[in-house]
Amino acid sequence: MEQLDFIGVASPCVGICSMNDSGYCKGCMRKRDERFQWNSYSDTQKQHVIKLCRQRYVRARRKQSQKPVQSDVTSPSPQQLLF
Image (cartoon, rainbow, N blue to C red):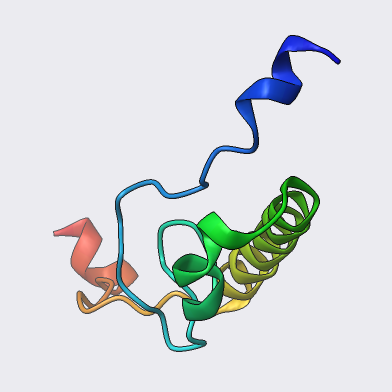
């Protein structure tokens, strides 16, 4: 058994504990049940949850980058830039 086997799988919590519109934690991307039952999961289950969290994070980033950026400030017309 290696030394890392004694440590176990660390929680992915980063201390940003609020839910997004999809029901995932904004900090670690776990579902509510995954957060509450974390300590009862086996290391294999924890690793699976972390894999799911990474996938959710990537999906959320892609979705966010595909949204059109809307600015509250209107861009000046070319004529306004001259004078």
